[in-house]
Image (cartoon, rainbow, N blue to C red):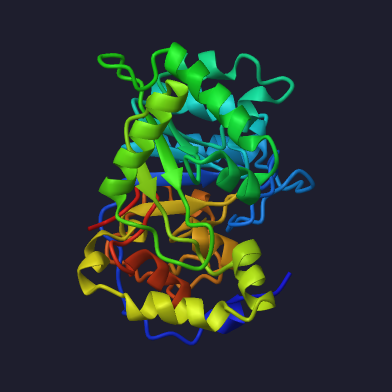
Length: 320
């Protein structure tokens, strides 16, 4: 695995600061039942990092006092963490919107038979990764059989009311490019997904999010191996749009890792770029309970151009 942080640290990305905190994004661990080529987490079946019960309770304690509307749970496959359901139930009990960033195939893993009903019963918003609506492309990027498993999972969620009018159960999909290119226009691609999945598989969803691939971890290392790293970073820089700076996710989101340390975003977490606060080298979530972060400087490097290039990219899809 090639280290990409040294290639990204000397940056011309503009200095930016935090706004009011709206989303607490919690990465509960890097274990996953898949090992996707584009994964910025480098997640996979052999990863053992997992959030403890103690850190999960710190997350809940933070939510009790913070004016945060959304708990965004990610991984790895977050559902494989033994404390995932505790976090979901506590977040919902506190009146928070809870999001599960789901790879879909985890619904067919042993021991997860009741997961779809659990998500629906707790009215969890499912944000599901489906990097293409074509079977060959998905299997090439994520492994043989992944597309068929994903379609079965989407049908199960639809049957429980997800993406059905009036149900209040939200099911969004996430697209990533196959290689070192910018995502296509989100609205047009969403309609293509909607038409194809409905007509071919009788699958419904609410929105499509298009995300740029970040030149870090597994994807970044692949670019280095192929001699494409510099060209891809330059593509991101050449397509930088100042107007996207107001809405990049790091300005209103706080990322927490499995140990309880905090970062400006999940990408910075993977690079080991901690949130800057009160002169500390690293800050734990426990240290921020009851504290405000408005105006706090955000740690940036060249990968940040991935969020401002073209139509922009964030955990909520395109910005423009």
